[in-house]
Image (cartoon, rainbow, N blue to C red; front, side, top):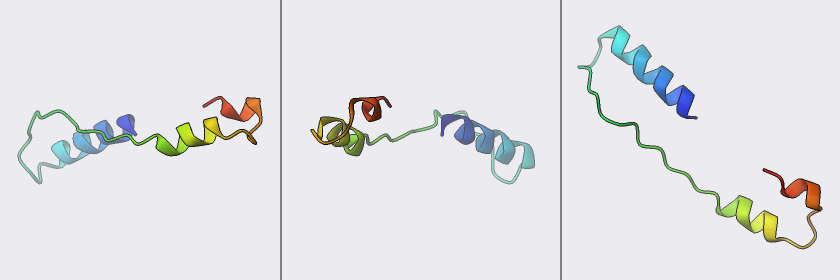
Amino acid sequence: AAKEAVWIRKFVDELGVVPSKNYPIEMNCNNTAAVSMAKEPGIMKGARHF
């Protein structure tokens, strides 16, 4: 997702539609589903590798 965010920012900057800003790209991450799946006893050990 980070690569896509950088690509979109560069694309919009090259279009010149909006003024170019050099702010950091904010990325939100929620991995609670992955953690709960890894803790599930019925999940096989190989499926816990993310």
